[in-house]
Length: 365
Image (cartoon, rainbow, N blue to C red):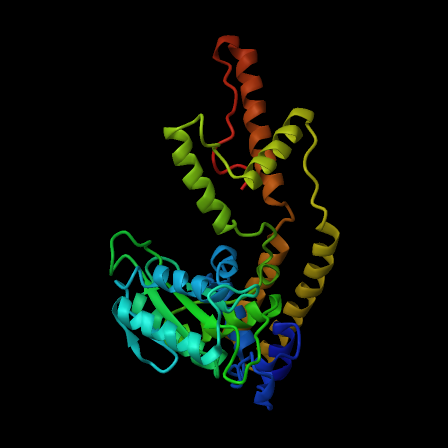
């Protein structure tokens, strides 16, 4: 079978520093410690077993507001809930209350010469999350170890949000991590898409060290075509919807993004033209190549006596075979089209009972 190194390298899509580690710390910005060997197989098998996918994201709203000390201060006030939630820094120091948070902020301002307002982001705000039911302490521990490896040489602070500490918090445990863009040598981090995936893989590794079953894979690995809902857009839609119910003349029911999608979907339903997946051909090529690799890997694992892992990879290959290529817009169109056909049938049977399908809040998101 292929070596763990080669499989890990393929899984991460490029020869990342997560596989080899960084030899020269002068360039900063990425972990010096490589991921554990076999991380690819561990995550693929976990995905086949339907273990929950870890989530690591950089919220645009918070990150764009982290320009200068003013933005960093506002974000740490948010994470600490104005001093009510305990924060922890890269040294393991606990920050309790607004005074200790302010002391940390003052140190950052003086040590790195960060002005009150700047043109460039001075901090990167990251959210590490798991589904409801995951032990919050395990998520916090994993986040601590993740940050220590991924951002060695950087100043940072983090805090846990979960309903166990405050009933107003969401049920899914998540950690807000605020990392200064410049490390101790003045080098700035500039994460790319592949870096975010590497972060997910590392966070999953730390969660498994805590005994949490989880996976970190790409949508393509699982044969998933529709992208996940944009959490920021969903939050805006929920807020606008509530405001619209109270003051319909002042607030619109949806965000501009959702309104545009609803408009496109409405036109498609009116004309009877099903939306097109512009990336279907590319997805088919990717899936075909992935399926071939899975089948080869399953045979190699079986020959090596790793029958459980071979079965998992075969199961993942079958998921690709069974998966379709429909986008979320196409799925929503099909749903509305079915309702229209049912209404037309009802009209033929009883014209008085005709009902017009309504586009609910979820359609178009």
